[in-house]
Amino acid sequence: MTRRPAVLVARAVFGDIVDRLRVHFDVEDNPADRIFSKAELIEHLQGKAGAFITGSERIDAEVLAANPQLRAVCNMAVGYNNIDIDACNARGVLATNTPDVLTETTADFGFALMMATARRMAESEHFLRRGEWTRWSYDMFTGSDVHGATLGILGMGRIGQAIARRGALGFGMKVIYHNRSRLAPEQEAPLGARYVSKEELLRTADHLVLVVPYSAASHHAIGAAEIAQMKPTATLTNIARGGVVDDAALAAALRARTIAAAGLDVFEGEPKLHPDLLTVPNVVLTPHIASATVATRRAMADLAVDNLIAALTGAAPPTPVNPQVLPLKA
Ligand code: GLV
Image (cartoon, rainbow, N blue to C red):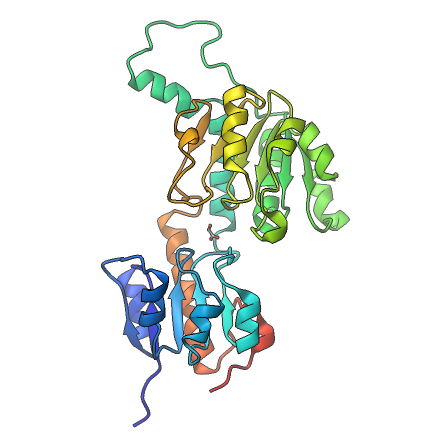
């Protein structure tokens, strides 16, 4: 009898979705949800043909070299900056991600975080919980309008466009964006979206939302110099990745009120945060939950499992990042 391929499920995830893998593979899972160090990850991957991973597992050249039998790494995330794609290509390892299924949920959250930031929801809630609310006053927690304002989007992929739709069609916002490539006119037109330089985006946006993938090119795309170009009344919302923003520079700018406020779902070095972000009042902080609805997290897990099953059974994986490595070696 030929042995079934072995796979690693590196983090805890819905049991019934892991069971789908058990139909095809010998599965080592991690219901205790221990976060593996690099050495532990290398060890747990020994003998595995594939892995279900999340953004907390880093698949680099060293991990791949220590596991030459590995054929597919299937990320339960749309972003895949935790995977060295060049190293995967060099070894013929397939990487997959989970686009599309999280677009609308993530856009909902990005929009909510931007609104919470503009309308000072966290700061005012903290004030209330501290028992400091004793009377109404005309300027208590006055923020800035979202409706009719200029929405700036850095990174106009699927999620950026979904945020633009909410702004333009739901809130009458003027949409400007900057991206590596410009949208087709038929994509821009229904949103009234205007492609602008990064400088114009920074100078003009009332609410700037970051949705750009993290890479060496986008590292600290927003630092002190960029924040200095923004309006003092502007808000900045980051649902992209920690590292796109220089968090130390942002914390300093928030304290100095160079911009009005920020909404952050992602952080450099998360789950650790730059300590100054915890002490500035004008920031809304959430723990990387933009895609976190039950339905969407299930859809993401299902898609990662679809990819893993397809990759190791010779079918076409639905969402490959590096399809050029297909077909995989048996
Ligand atoms: C979450 O950050 C994702 O990339 O899916």
